[in-house]
Image 1 (tube, rainbow, N blue to C red):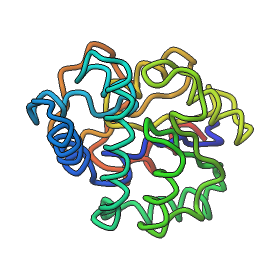
Image 2 (cartoon, one colour):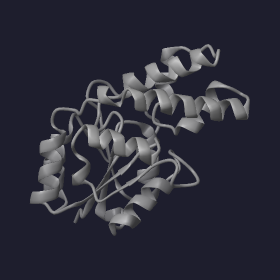
Image 3 (cartoon, rainbow, N blue to C red):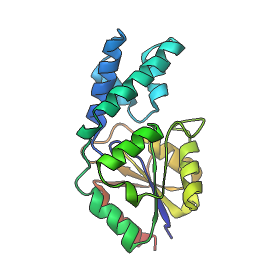
Length: 211
C-alpha cells in the first residue's frame, strides 16, 4: 500500500525549467562565464552547487555563482507557474487518499518555500527537503531518505515522482516506486522508472494498483 508521495519540484510540480536555465545564463554572464542554454538545461535537476562546479572549475567562483543564481531566481519567483493539474491532484492525494506528502528538491529550502507559497500549495505538504539539508544531492538518495523519514513512510510504501533521471536513480536505489513524469519528451534514460506518466493526474490510476 502506498502511504506517501515525495515529489521533485522543478519540472514536476512547477513549470520552471526555462526559468532556471535563464537565471543560470544570467548569473554566468554577470561573472563573465560563457555557457550555452542547451548545456545548462541538461544539468537541471542537480543542486545549484553541483551545477556551478560543472560550469566553472574554480571552487570559490563556483560557490559565488551558485549564490548569485539563487539570488536572481528568488527575485523572479513570481514568474513561477504551476502545471495546471497540480492543485486538484494534491488536494485529492491529501484529502481523499490521506497520503503524506513531501517535496525533495535540488534547490535550497528557502527557494522551495518561496515557490510553494507563490503557487499557493505549501499547505498540502508535510515536509520539504532541499540540497542544504543533506550532505549529498541528487542523484544520491540522501534527500529522498530524509524526506521519507520526516513523513514516517518506508520507501516501498512510497511513490517518488520526478521528471529526470536524477529522481529515478535514487528512487530505485532505495526501493521506492519510481514514477517519471514525461509531459512532452523524455531525455535519454539509462535507468528505467517503474512507471511513466504524462501528467500527475495519472497518479490516481497508479494508486488503485497499490491499494
